[in-house]
Length: 483
Ligand SMILES: *Cc1c(COP(=O)(O)O)cnc(C)c1O
Image 1 (tube, helix red, strand yellow):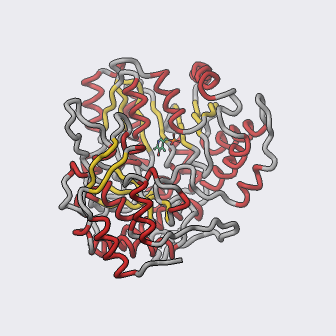
Image 2 (cartoon, rainbow, N blue to C red):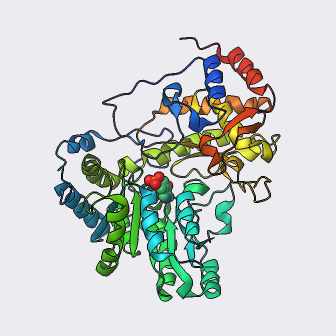
Image 3 (cartoon, rainbow, N blue to C red):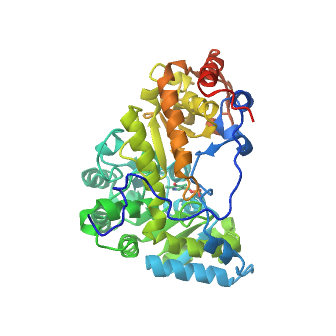
């Protein structure tokens, strides 16, 4: 065994923390959940949090803080300009990443706004291993285009590849030759690649890709929002890195990039964001966007309390005991469901467990939103809220026809340090039950369809009385669950 504790070969994933403050959860009786789902228009975004037992919608802004993070908030230095908290945060990030200049921002997409606004021109190209919704939207809004050059095998849902987020160097070369290096605004690599299932990139791949970009004089940008999971995977899966500490690996990665930005709603277990810039002149060029869109240069839209907590959160991110928790729980959940035959995205990544809804409910046509139907069924059968990642999240084609998503997924996010193993077992149990009764799940159709981002606020209805039938079967098995 390598010199790392039980990580990745444990039979039972471990919480390397204990509960000190709790929030009571509600598990509504089954029939009430059906009513709530109807009221929410079969859209899990429209549910109230108080009606949810396991909120696995996202890991954004809902990760648990530690006692030390909460304690640090008390000595945050309130000041519009020159807050000592800001300088402590900047120094901590410099210590960890070795990059001197910090531009604060209110969240990850605000960093993307600033970077895109400055570097993307109409007609320019941004190379990515894979897009993230907001990262892409900021580029296309400015008339730029995104080239997603992840290796083909990264898109295969069922796989044993350790680094499905790796970018294809041959495709990168071809893209640069075709577009011309001067038309590439930057190369953005996303650690813990979100939309393909929180899948990591290897250090070696990051090094080769950034070396290539540098040969052509192309700016290199790291989206470090999900870096913590990626660090864990590099440590346990990349042979040449297994004797390096998390701190050393972080530094080696940061050294490859001109710019590192992050959503602190994920990285650092708080809320906020930041852009680290290596070059002083570039830093000064970007400053204006912060003062114009975010806030003064020493808070950028963040509360100083959150910033003070983040300083501790960044330090905790360097601790394998801390960053191992989510990936281990996800692995356990994915492996258990995979063994049962539930179609899962494998191997488990960071961020969450991903169900392949297209296979799970293969009797529901894409036009009736299989992922949307499955995620609604999961709330009704267990009070579990996941996120639809499929056709429902797409926008219609210009001619009004559905744009069918290439993957239909339901994501069950694991916010960090939040759920226990017994709660995870409960989720596994309910997903298994639902899989056995999947033929009872039917399709959905819109009754109110917003033009943009319809998945956030749209209202739907079932195409038949399948929700009632499904709930009858559920109640026959588990009882009424009356309080
Ligand atoms: C969440 C996320 C973002 C956007 O961050 P917000 O704080 O939600 O604006 C950007 N990139 C990745 C990889 C993310 O996961």
